Image (cartoon, rainbow, N blue to C red; front, side):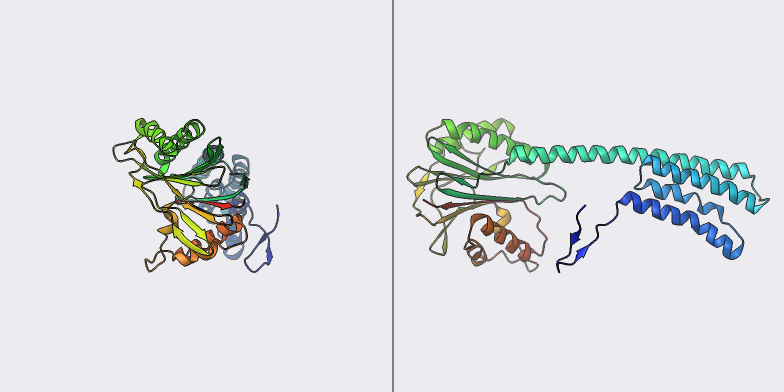
Length: 352
């Protein structure tokens, strides 16, 4: 395991595993009655029984059983040290044995639950790769970078989506935001991407691609479900075509200035099947940013949105990847790390 580092660049040792820490605390707890006995001549036998329960919070069954065995041995030794007591020794010993056995069982149950959670996490990570695979750094004269941040704690993917596909009609792109959060939003995002991947390579007109996607996801929508999205197409000659389905307009950076690409805006996917495309011009060196509302609706502690000039400044970075890294850092600073919404970013630069 490599050494971790602090923000100041000072090397620090990694924290010990939780199981090791639990065993250390349990051993110290077993020693506590012995220390008290050495100081006062009196052993508080009831303290021993806590040690196996401490070990069970993080250690596996084997190490918990070792602590449990030590507890039973020390209880027997303490009974011999104590001499006659009000309750028979076997009652005390039976209680300690029962609690020690319970601790071992609990440790086993906890370990199996942790292993199941680890498998589910691995499956979720694999699902993320299938849902949002890495984008290529360049396609026929277009540099590309993408970033994704889930607003759900503990989740690596949410209801935002993006995809970029080279086709015979040009490079086709989609970015979207599924209404809602959680598993239902992730499943609906998967249906959107699946429909787009099928239609993007087969349907000649971009507005018809949007219609095909909208019809395909219809059977999977709840009463209040919809998906806002922007579809874009970069023709071989560089012509830019956009279909906006109720989404935030893409931002085009030209000559250091940032402007939204506005045109005909249709209702979100799932609410409409007829869409209209519009065209826009861009030149070599221009950058096109497609994004979800996690970017423009990021607020600081005073409720202020992220200033547009910070977006424009970030997009001036040398490369697309560096630009998005700078933009993500700007959002994090602006919100103070309190990011509660999903955010997807897709940046394209016209190189040729």
